[in-house]
Image (cartoon, rainbow, N blue to C red; front, side):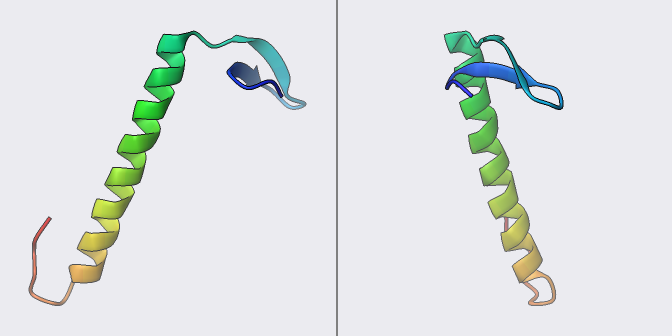
Length: 54
C-alpha cells in the first residue's frame, strides 16, 4: 500500500491519498492514544499501593 493513502475493505483497496491535514490528525490521535495508554498503565500499576497519582 502506498504511504499516505486511505485504504479500506477486505481485500484492502486504496481509495485516495490523504490530505496533509488528515495525516497530521492521525499523528495527533496516535500520540494521544499512546499517552492515554501510558496513563492507564501507571494507574493500574498504582492500584493497591495507596498512591492515587495520575
